[in-house]
Length: 65
Image (tube, rainbow, N blue to C red):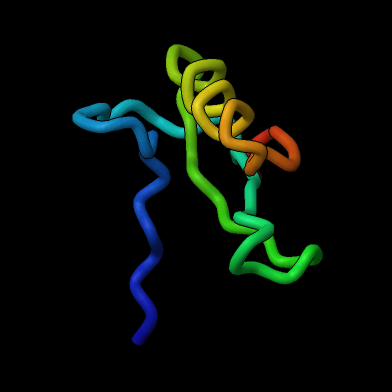
């Protein structure tokens, strides 16, 4: 039986409902088409995306579901 993943923000200590997918990959270890996903609430969408963008990992931010 598959348990549904709880859609909560990936920011440390945050338990708010996820509204966005912050999609990223590390080009040194992932093929270009691979996307890893962090979930983000409204409050943390920008800070999570900025963190990844500064490292060159951010690919896109999209609505969750």
